[in-house]
Image (tube, rainbow, N blue to C red; front, side, top):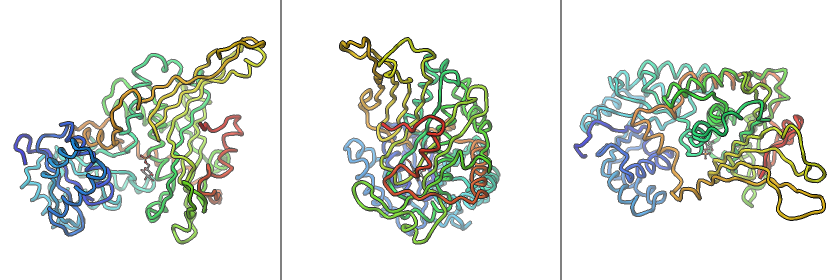
Length: 488
Ligand code: BG6
């Protein structure tokens, strides 16, 4: 270990797990490559499997070679691997946490970032154990993945225990969507341009759609998924965060609390969905057998091996009851085993108040829209009306053309892993892109209300074939407002 900056260190619970191998070590290798990590910083992985350090490094190396094959990154990965350590740990046993503390001392880690890449059921015991072992004092920080709880009550219970161990400014709750470049671009688009903000309200915007469509199924993740469904797995966190960033008021600055205060206000303004309107505003579905990527795939219940009431698809019409957004519906839609992988925020503006065009050109006229696409490619496209070139007896014709900010074309750089930004910010103590306790709890409160209304109504999720865009009701939900899902 280098002696330059010996005090920083990441202590990674779940060090040999899927998240660590797939996302965290590659992110650290890329950060090392760009000299963004504190020099000489050790990474102490704690995992359940008995393994020595050499075997653990070989495991991480094998994965890194697959995910970051580039030779420059390989050099950085080699440097990083020399500083990767491993300790077989049962995080629920106090004696193991003691040993972990000793190992941290040996490695000179006095500014630890405890990263909990483990099942959420371990968050409380780990924080409790670290507290009892005296390892949580300032400047120690904790990073936690979603989901934090499965409803408001369980989320509060976890947050209480975490709060007893770490002050809120040292708690970093990850929503990896906030680490995606396009999500940060949304902040830049809104607040680094004068162009959009005056239009960003119910006078000019007709409605907003947020879609997170995935082609993959739940597969062997069902023991986790069956408890959360699409509401707990995607809506409560990723979709609520996207909604907040679209709808929030301009913060005074980018300080963590300035941004998070504005997001909380949006969550508080979300209109509760009650039993009386759940049928109108919420559609739930569960994929059955069908086709995905040209091959037959099993339905969710077959993957699970028994029938289930868990939704793998949800479409919601939400409303934000404040001055800016009164009357503007926000349509949210997410699902597994849909035809395309597509994550986007679509903002449709109102039609021009009066058309000076007549005949066919009047019919050509369509409202402007702004598409912020996160996946599969990162792209921002504003569609504007233009005069179609050419002559016709009818006179002027119009067409809608895209003004595109294709991020791939604009920056030839590789696409970053969302965790790079988040790991860097957690190490630097910047929590702007992390979720504060009250945000999580407000989001749960709203989601609990929807789940509760749904449960009381006695509906079951509607079946949809794998490879389709969800149950027919999802189309009816938006079409009865005179609108349609964006689909190009
Ligand atoms: C995770 C969910 O948080 O996000 C998964 O648990 C989902 O079910 C994933 O597939 C989607 O993330 P991304 O970055 O691939 O859109």
